[in-house]
Structures are given as structure tokens and as C-alpha cells.
Length: 134
Image (cartoon, rainbow, N blue to C red; front, side, top):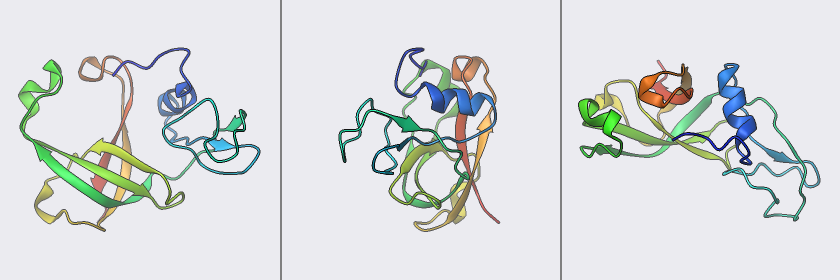
């Protein structure tokens, strides 16, 4: 889960460090691209802006897992992962752990993102987590 310092997703991680969610947008065609790439799959442009996007979304899908995919998660199973469709950019879906009780979770439920600060559990990298909106 450690970001590549030279990877095309660096502005995403830098944004999280500043408390912002940033999603790449092609400067040539205006298409938002996720996952970050060096070339736009729509127009083959190679220049991207990284505008701040509101961390609000709806549940597109979700799953509960009992498998700790990383050793650091061994004490946190089971946990719920949601695939969230961003409200501002519906073509983008982001995965993230749900930090709330899943008992009222449903497809289409409103979410808001919270940025978990860097720490040992996240390999000193901030990460986006999801909460159910009231």
C-alpha cells in the first residue's frame, strides 16, 4: 500500500496528505480518469489537472471480508469495503474501508469520505475511509 514516489498517482497521495481528495482530469478532453494513468484512455492526452473533488459518494457495491490481506489487518477482521461512486464525478468509483457499523449499509446509501492520517496501520500513508452519511 506504499505509493510509488514517481507513480502517476502521486498527486492523489499528496492531496490526501493535505486533507484533500484529488481526481485526475485530462487537460485535452476533460475526462476524469481513475485509476491514474500517464495517458488519457479517451483522447491519448498526456497532461492532467488534479482538481479537488468533494469526498461525497453513494455505495455502488460492498463486501465484508474475514481475510486479512495485510498482516496489519489481522486484528481488524471482519471489515467492510465499499465501492463508492463519487457524487461530483459519477464515472469514478473508489474502494475504501467502511468505518461505521454496516447494519444499515445498502446499495445507493450516501457516504462521505474521511482521511485517516498516516500511521503504522497505513504504512505512514494517509488513506481515504468511508462513513455512512446521516
